Image 1: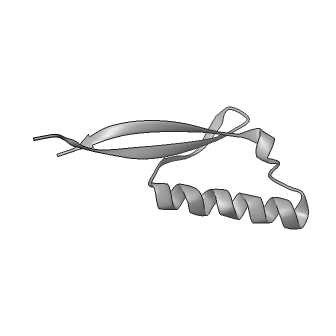
Image 2 (image 1 turned 45 degrees about the vertical axis):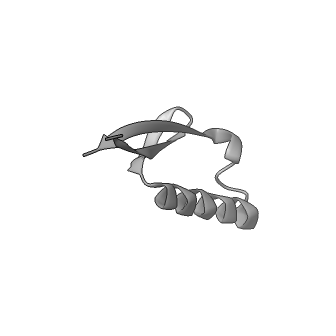
Length: 59
C-alpha cells in the first residue's frame, strides 16, 4: 500500500521561525492575515517572509 503523505508548512520571518508544522489551511489563514495587515497598515512586508515545506508520512 502506498503511504499517505502530508505537507507541513513553516513560516520564517527574516530567517527566524515564527510558525511551524502548519496544515495547508492554517498556513493559508496565517498568510492571509499577514496580507491584510500589510494592505491596511504597511506592516508585515511580504519580502520578509519565507516558507519551508516538509513532507511526512501518515501511518
